[in-house]
Length: 169
Image (cartoon, rainbow, N blue to C red; front, top):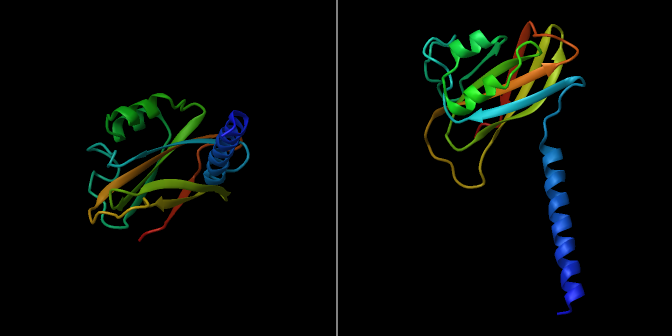
């Protein structure tokens, strides 16, 4: 094969692959209101400390729980000292941001994925989907935790937060 043709094909393949990757990430990024920035952390375990508001009870199949954490003292008291969770808390500036913790009882393989945040009167509506892997799913049950850091330049901590989780199999 001609060297120029080979290099052209390789360059085109890399360009299409990179563009496809960026396009897929853009397509899968959550829809959020203007003036709001978010970061998420999905943890395949219960991140609640023993004295958590939910009192550390394991979640049943399809059982859902969420809470808003407004300050570092509450975060330190109610969340386990787990490496990634502690780092997420440490990186949160609670003067400008707050966290919403969403928990769900489901099989171990899927992930909780933030789809949409909408402003509603006095609060937020958060829509989350369950992202199953392309291969089979175990018949086990664990608590998944999705930590959402919200920095909102237009509104402060919401009075109400509603969460809708879709995609159970």
